[in-house]
Length: 296
Image (cartoon, rainbow, N blue to C red; front, side, top):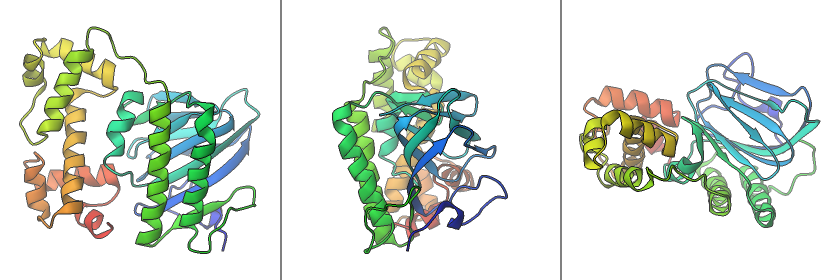
C-alpha cells in the first residue's frame, strides 16, 4: 500500500523527521514556498539528490545550494532547514532518511561544507540515470516485496523489517558511491595535502590511540594551531572531531561484527567512559549501542 508523508510516525509537533531505525525514502516535486525547519535537528541522516530546479539546505550556520545532479547530505544532531531556493520555481528531488552505514562518512568527507553538511556537486549527467534507478530500487525495496515503480506525484516508502532496510541501504550505498566517484572532489590546500593526509592515516590506522592535536601536529612537523587550521580547511572538520568520528565508525563495526560488551567496545574504540560513549554514539547513529547491534 502506498505510504505518504503524512503517514510517517511523528516525533515532534512541527516538521517531524522519521524516528531512528527506519529507512524512509521518497521523491518530491515542490514549488516555491516549500520548506522544512528542524531547529533540534534529526535523529537520522538525510540524503537528497536533485533532479530539477534548486533547493537550499542549511545545517547550523552553513548552507549548500542543490541544483540538478547534486547530492547534499545532512548529518543528524544539528539544527537544519531546507527549502526551495530563493528565485527557483521548483525543487524536484529524491530523498532518504536513514541511519548511515559507518563506511559512508569517509567517502563524503572530502565534500564537507561544514561539520555535518556535505555537498557532492556536479555529478556527471551520464550517472544520473543510474542514480535515479538506484533510488527507484530503494523505494521499491522499502515498500516491500510487492513494491513497484510508483506513479503518484510524491511517493514515499518506509522499510520496517531488517531485510527491507538492508536492501534499501544497499541501493542508497550505490547512490553515494556513484556520486562521490563521479563528482569533482574539491581540491585541498596545496601545502597541506600530504601532511593532513598523513594525519588522517594515523587516525585511521589506530583510532584507539590517545591522539591529540599536539601529537598529530608533531607527527607532521607543524604547530598545533597551524595544523588544526589546515586540517579543518582540507577535511571540513577539526582534528578531534575527525578522531571522534573514526572512533565511532570503529565502534559501529565492532558492534556489527563481534559480541563484545558495550563497555569493551567503548574501550577498544578509545573511549574511556562507556557512559560518554553511549551518549555520543546515540547522537551520531540515533540509537544507543545495544539497539544498534540489535537492529543489524
